[in-house]
Structure formats: C-alpha cells, structure tokens
Length: 254
Image (cartoon, rainbow, N blue to C red; front, side):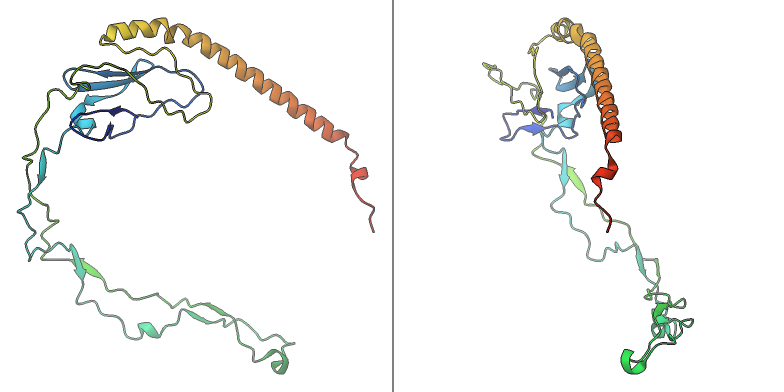
C-alpha cells in the first residue's frame, strides 16, 4: 500500500490503485518519492512502478465536478432501449407441448407382474418437440432517447491545494513506521528518510545493490542444494518401499 496523511481529512488516504509488492524470497528495495509540485513516484529496486499527481491517485481533494442538484430526469424520458414486439404472438398450442413424453421404444418387461409390481408405465424422455417457455420477442424502442446522464456542474467546495505534499504543516518532529508483517520471516533494514533523491540513491548503492548479487547467488545455491536433498530422500523412500515383503503384509486368504 501507499498511504498519505492529510491534515484536512480525518482518515489516511490510501492510493486508489494498489501497488503490488514483490512476492519472492529475495530482498527488495522500496522507494517513495514525494515532490513539492504535488507529484509522487514509487520505485521497486530503482524501477518506477507508479507515478503521477497526488490529487489523481489519492483522495486529497473533493471532485472538481458534482451532479447538478437542481437537474432532474424529465418525466417523459424514455430510457428503455428495447420493448416487447406487439406483433409477436404465441403460436397456438405452444403450451400444450409437454417437456417430457413416454419413451416410445420402451417395452414392458416380460416378467412384469401388474398385480405384484403395479401398473407398468414407460420411462419418460425429453420431448424433441418441446421448445421451452415462450418468450415474446423484443424490438428497438422507437421512442428511446438514450441513457439519461445527470448534468455536472463545478463543485463549489473544490479548491486546489498547492501544499498537499506537506505531510507536516508545522514541521516534522518525529518519523515512525507502521509495518504490517503478513509473512513469517520478513525483515526490514537499511531505512533512510531524506529530502535528497541523490542521497537516497547513493545510500541504496552502498546497501541494497552492494548485497543484491551476492544474496541471489547464495539463494540459488541454497535452493539447488535443497532440491538435491529432496531428490535423494525420494530415491531412498522408493528404495525402502521396494524392500517391503508385500506377501507378509497381506492376510491369509479365506
């Protein structure tokens, strides 16, 4: 998530379109840049994954336009694009056709006893003549005016704020992190808060990127070793199964 605080609203502002994190087991570098022109950018491993204006991606400001409260849909507005065809009539006898009929190929069993088994009735099958429930066709409505759209007007409460980017209006005295760890073993390290993008990039080179390749190499070696050990365990298991005396496991036949 990317979340901002705005002193003009009680709730924190969550980014409208979620920024997905990496899901593998390797370390990743997450960077949030907040600019004084009210733009932002999110980078993962120094690659931009989201950027734009604060008011476009977050609910800092009210909508520029609102529905005109004085506008009402006319009473005679026709917004049904289709109507029932008045010339389409249900065919005579349509409802007299049953969904199922007795199977004409079914024969009463020779050993059927009406006194013991009751009166024999042939099984039912789907009727090939049955066409289902009749539905009246629809045609284009000649009076259709299209979907009515509520007229919009400028929002009197809208006012652009040049200082949205100032998360601390009177100056920040503390920096804190609310970290939700949803995966066991997740660690956080090498955290920097600065007003210089260049300083953050240099810090990343000396921390994350300095360890990145070595970590990937160690991880690949570990996974290769783990796969080899699992393969050996599978081979040993199959070998042990082959040594079982299956006859000894079975009971005597009666």
